[in-house]
Length: 120
Image 1 (cartoon, rainbow, N blue to C red):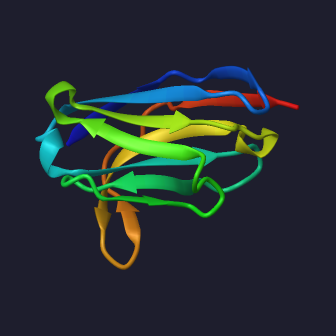
Image 2 (image 1 turned 90 degrees about the vertical axis):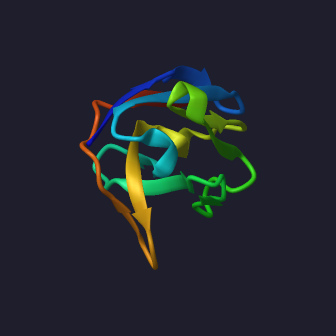
């Protein structure tokens, strides 16, 4: 199993930027697709972005052009660069190992997440 720890969240004004990090340990990180999810208050957890072991990426329509997912296999870390943040991006952000088929399925244990708050 992959153990995960998210960091980098905080309070930022609309239009600002944040960079989230997810440190992974345990199973072989470099072989796994990874993804960022978020859960806003009162809403279900949603997929934000994913990256395959080979570096191919995919994004939710709501963040395309603003967010960038990347990974550093040497550091067992996946990142989410978030630019042009909007109040509707406010959520707890989680990362997870995923299996990508027709759908993207989280397969690891959820970490505690990191809170991103965007003020208007």
